Amino acid sequence: MSIAQLQRRDLILFDLDGTLVDSAADLYRAMNISLEKLHFPVVTEDQIRAWVGKGAAKLCETVLEYLFEDASPQQHALLLNTFVDVYAQELCVNTQVYEGVLPFLDYCQAHGIIMACVTNKPEQLARGILDILSLSSYFKMVVGGDTLPERKPHPLPLLHCMQSQNVAAAQTLMIGDSSNDVEAARRAGIDCIVVSYGYNHGENIYDCQPQQVVDRLVELVEEDQIRRQA
Image (tube, helix red, strand yellow):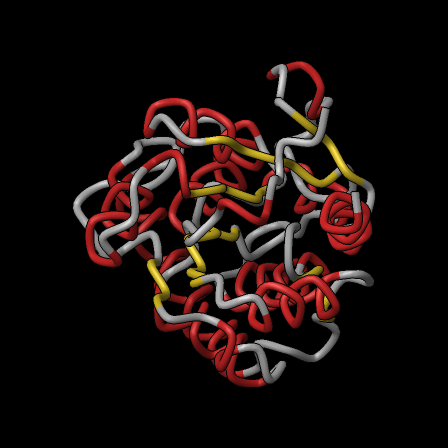
């Protein structure tokens, strides 16, 4: 059974990295430039793809744990500040919108569904990517990892969007790519669909028992059109 049921949704919350955009190549690039600046060893793109999804601070922490096992708070602050500065200068060298995303966003917009981007990426960086890739106009709200006191998998960012738009849980849907999204949605009491192609910290997305997995978001348009014609 399809979880989307778009006819009854007033609000859809979207994760950013690994769900709407493939940003791992730029995160990898910015991380290695940062590591080289600090005279630290570098990492691989596959490692970054396995580590992204929990925000810049967690990514830097994971990189340092891998490189040094026991990194100091000073090293973490240094790498985080360097990485955010480097990344912010060139957010979209290789970052692209995933295939199937734009038709879904257009369809939701055409049917009057409010959309919000809820990411663990710092809000300023998330807004920068949405601007560069001409996605900003779709989203009424952007909530980053530093917007509120808590980030996913805490339900606060999701509940904040629902409350500010005055939409109940039954009319809200989360779309993401990781166990963070699934857990946040469960704790917020809303349905959640995940994509098969994103970043899930190196784990199989099915391990967190999501309600539904799709290969492309445009599949949800096709499902909805069939439902409306039935």
